[in-house]
Length: 229
Image (cartoon, rainbow, N blue to C red; front, side):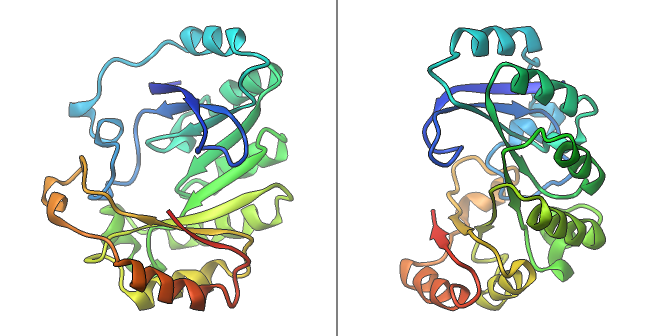
């Protein structure tokens, strides 16, 4: 598997657990605000980390770490993702997958094999704006299928959206809310212009606190928990 990075300890990536975070290299979206450009653009990518290095670290941390979060890039475009997760699970770790939901067939395989303990799916935009926001071919049917599959999987999950003010309006966010409702958790993530894929987004902003608060109140009519991060 193409591994672009390893965060050895995280207290925030897997809710309620101490985890390591594995970053896969490569993505089928090119969201301009992406804060991991080195995992998206091959020209910015460094050498991949050997899987053996990851497993060696996880072996040493047994009993101290509880979980492994696999993020990206987009993990589900990795052909050997199921094999990698299977090895992590065999070591006794919980596994959380971060995904853009564009590969429902892979998601179905992982769920059926009981390889996942938590799923976080990024909802990039209302379906009619997906191609524009992701700068990739629209995958409306795939996104709908993944949402439905995650809801029916019987494991903990959340949906989340990174909010760039110039890209998503209040009505867009509410439309996403209707797309995923009902859901146990929806996280609105503040865009922080630190190192976006498109450097023009260094000047972009997110919603003001009062704007987040107002949309949160409306979303909570149909979503159990709405978080602003």
